[in-house]
Length: 157
Image (cartoon, rainbow, N blue to C red; front, side):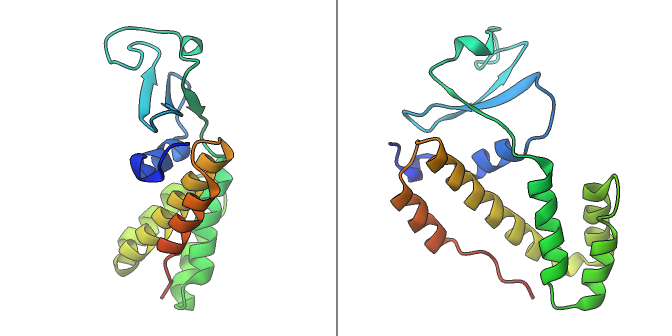
């Protein structure tokens, strides 16, 4: 098992949220906790192309489905105490383009909530990353529980 402090949880959370194509992927070394970025053109060192199947000593970090991240926006909009702001944010979540509309609404009409949103979404992303590490057998459950106790979910205004 890897010490959780040796892993860049923020980078792992970003990898789990990366919804781009399969020309690049994120991987983690289960022995060291090092996170690496692979591309089909330049491998993991940025110079030498290598087939991803040859990196069998690394664990592939598959992105979590977009509905996981969408639910954060729903929970945020429903959880803030300013009903009017919450309703406006909720309306942005209908149909295609919800992520962009939510972000635009937040930045343009509710700039006071941007830092609150970032703390809320980043905290949830970090907790998901730590749970993923436990599920993959890279860190132990005790470390994960300590992390969650030390990093509680942000309170919404």
